[in-house]
Image (tube, rainbow, N blue to C red; front, side, top):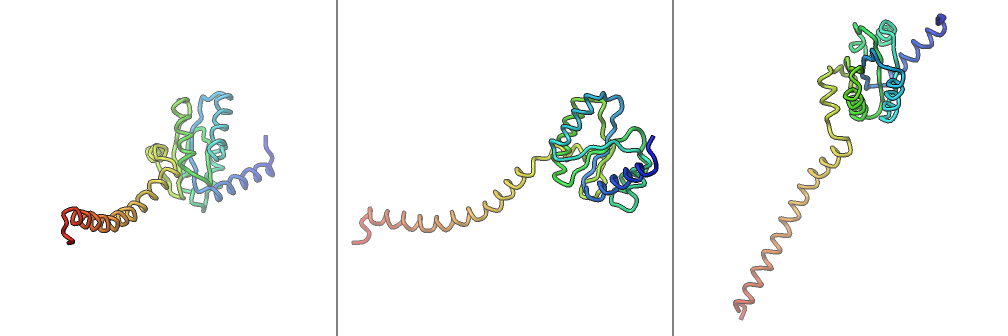
Length: 174
């Protein structure tokens, strides 16, 4: 059993993690084997996140006064959390994929950019395209206007050249 100092260190570490992570996913891990848990931790690390099993009352106390307070309020059952300060979409995708392969792993709730979201929103987030693809689409849309402008400007010159060429072929300049 942990003594008071160790519990205080755990509390402070959890509080620090919650402060520095705007993206947190609460999950349930009942009936998971040790090898499944090991694989889950590997998947979370691969997505750029961290994974921690938490005590419900400790998590609720650590979140007091933080954006995660609404997320941690009233959690029940065996709870773990996956969190990141990086890309929440990558972590949500990795966790969703793992949840499909292992039905013992479930989502409880989440927090993205400091805002509490439900399980359906986590699934929507996991179905989003990667950040790079969104950036590419935005750049395409920004570039499309400029391309149309250049095409229109070139079209005027091309049309003038065609008219002059047709006039020369019809001997209109004699």
